Length: 120
Image (cartoon, rainbow, N blue to C red; front, side):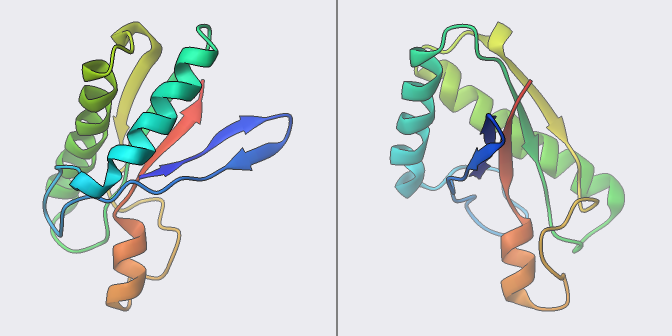
């Protein structure tokens, strides 16, 4: 997952690893990133975020939309498990339609399998 929360035209990024191709679970090594996001949200009780899941272009459009939504919901659940109110979180799945890298090679596809958090 990449955290993109804008503050006066500055963007902060943080990666939270998604398990592997075709999966929506968060890797254990992403616990620190989740903790940092929880800390940020706790420091600003009025902050609401969109949690946006993405995929690479492998698979059907339909399955990628569902997978990207499941990835976003996995992050929302992790935040809820850490005490963040669901009223502050909205999840969306974009499938393969907003790549940050080319899907022509594995490195690019791996970068496209992500979740972003964006200030509402």
